[in-house]
Image (cartoon, rainbow, N blue to C red; front, side):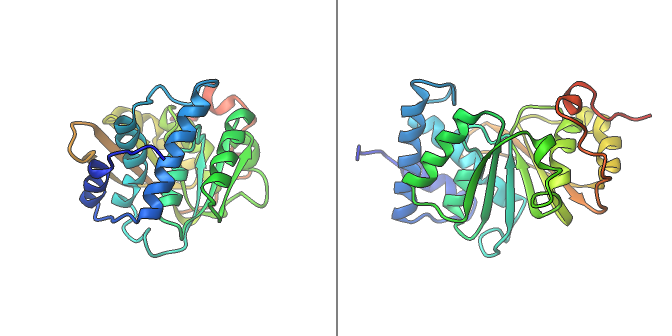
Length: 245
């Protein structure tokens, strides 16, 4: 294995009050190597330098601990919608092996990559599925079954809420990873969040450790069941987000 300097990674994790084992370090490195290998023939990430991947993908992903303080101890269920190359779901699974994780992505080639990562890292309690959120959220085995739904996908909050809130069980949370302040975006999404059974809980704003990279974990708690007509058929949540009447 190539010799990587993980000192900054270990230091960043300490800022989140997290410690990492040798095995976990090896898993993160193997993940990085698979990411860059597959990225050479398919588009997974524009970020390929080791230190940047560590900071902007791995540390960013596990920053969820800022919103869920007991994630280290509890056997929570979590679905990552629009996971892409596996962020944040795979770093969360490596860092918190007790989590039960589902990865969902609409591109089959990416799911092939995710399955390769799961196999090579010998991860258990994690599964990757090919499909759209609009379809999977209507399946009995996925609808309102998860403690948490997370997404780093780039979409407005109203659209993301329709994709994600239906997966969350009552009293669970949908947490959207954002890289900017979203006051205006939230105002536009209020109606959608309410209709879908959600309620604004809080925003956790911070900078990634030892950087000027702003992050916002936007937390919506599920307080009511999502009406059966949501999510609407594929494409509609993005084309026609639920807005204030």
